[in-house]
Amino acid sequence: MSKIKILKLVLISAIIGGLSGVIIGGFLILLEKVIELNLKYDLLILLLPLSGVLMTFLYKKYGKNSKKGNNLIIENINGRNEKIHLVMAPLVFIGTILTHLFGGSVGREGTGVQIGGTIGNLFADIFKKYDLDRKILLISGVSSGFSAVFGTPIAGSIFAVEVSTVGSLTYASMLPAITAAIVGDKVVRFLGVSHSHFQIPPIESFDFINIEKVILLSICFGIISKLFVYMTDFFKVIFNKYIKDDYIKIFIGGSIMVCITFLLGNRLYNNLSLGLLMDSFEGNVPYFAFIIKLTLTTLCLSVGYQGGEVTPLFVIGATLGATLSPIVGIPVAFSAALGLIGVFAGATNAPIASFILYLELFGSNNMIFAIIVCIISVFISGRKGIYSSQVWLEY
Image (cartoon, rainbow, N blue to C red; front, side, top):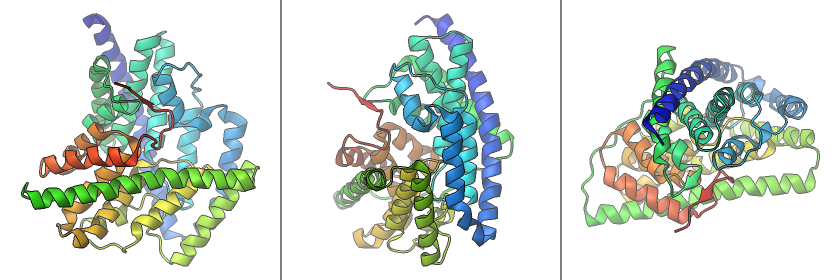
């Protein structure tokens, strides 16, 4: 690819990043407000089943193929030409806001990825870009979306390149992707959006005993990653087998979420569960928090609530790490940080992006342990991840 062509793609990617940053910045500001409302007014959760019915109607009426979500973007990156409709962006925006307003247990990265990917596709159409050029602009859109949501531009750009084809990094897309990611992140920060700040784990000695402990943790993280994927599929199979109507399906799924919330007697597991995530680094979490969050998130996603998996995966991993910390005998902040990236790596099959994410969130402390966790977790979790449209490169 010529330098002139790459420069043109970089300039277009900068525009994609800027536009994605503006929209996602507005989304994150609104998301924070609706979560505050949900936590302030407990009875709002009673409307979760009805909000699900409304979302299902909107997707059926206007969404066309938008219900495929992130997988539609990944399929197009991998060369499939199924049309990405512009309506995907506003639908996932509205759907995610509604889910969080009424207390669903979902994330937000899916919204960022789909908004960014839709914008990337729009500019590919505007500039009549096809094949590799179109793929690069889609990757740039995903990169800007992920980066804008989490404030991690390097991890966002690597994630966008790595997640579509496991085992392959297309270097031609790296410069446009990192450009879009940086611009998206800067725009969001300019709009006043703040991202989560985590406790940096203490430096642990790289000795045989600690290596054994980290390997044991890595295996646990990989198993939980696999369980997340399995539970999502399990709920889908059960609901599809016994409930054919999508409206009834999401209403019942939402009703189960409501009942479990009242049975638990707290709001730790609703919305993003950022409070639970932060408490993980202090070791102040219930022992089985990771199982509860995993169950509620897979339930909500399997019946059709909009949002994403990544933030819940962070919560599941960090709380699992905190729970295992005294059992394995390592500092809780260290274990929680490894859990956060380990479960994310195993579920997404993106070990390099996960490792870079660790560096952006926690710095270089224990970076060797972090890469060990990412690799082993992906190995243990197996090929099937949360994105069914991923392609594995064979050697």
